[in-house]
Image (cartoon, rainbow, N blue to C red; front, side, top):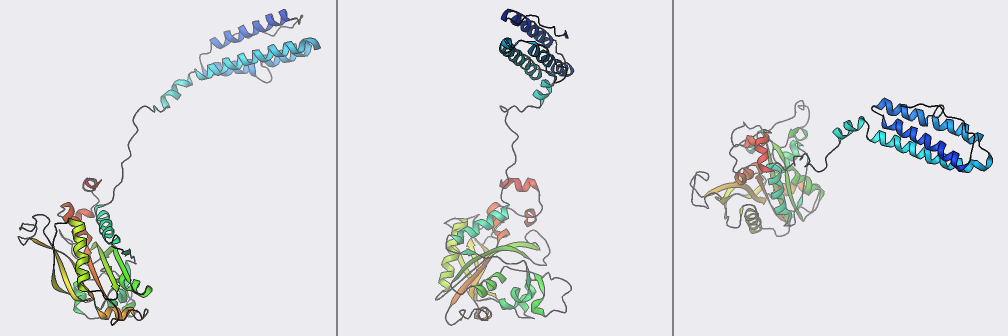
Length: 368
């Protein structure tokens, strides 16, 4: 790398200036051609563009100051041109220097296909629940929600399960500990059904009411292939003037056809639920054999799927304590409830309810 001293100028005519600046440009190009490392590039920059000892700074100090007034303009034009050449040489050295290989190694090749991020999907329970809710939303039902930790009053008493009622035994309850000093109706428990939301809605809203209530419920059940202490329900409530059992049958028949296909048939059998009277169990024709009889329907051609009934006047009496419009002599209504896991198991051919809660990605990836 050259490092020649800047000579003094004795003549300032165009010929002398052109010769002097041409010599400096040649020196700069010669120096730039030999740059092999980052240290060389930095040395070149300091040699030519350094503020204190740079060669261009020396040119400015010696030549511009010594030039007569009539030569300063011509000298300044040539000085600026030389400075542009030196800066261009430095930029080229930086762009093609040793660090460039490292930068290229880190560069992203936008022509390559990107790493595909796995797309999430609804859990089969969530998907089934949304599908059920969607069927009733199309009929004009709104969605009701409520707390999973409920009081005994809303979970049992207001649903016509008085203390000591034998029907409480069928809903073995997970209670919150340390509440023995509270009145029974104020004690907290994990709700055993989504029915409390029916009462909470009626207390807040006069009839007409049409709601569907999806949610998680808890019972102290032993886990097996078809039972779990945690499961999900979708319940519905319709209250208005002149609501009849025929309205209930028509609504559920439509819902079952929307969920399982138009060929599905429904039939109703008498049953008992404390909060409805009369009550019924609903069966659908077997979706696996078309009603002919198979192992899944135990050769009967029918599968029991949900419970329903007309709202018991006693339930309206509890609601009327806060909303007098719920007078059983003026209004009527029906309610129904279905287990989401049971429907999902039928729709997707799942034999073990525990598969929904195991978190096994091999199982869940089937539903993407």
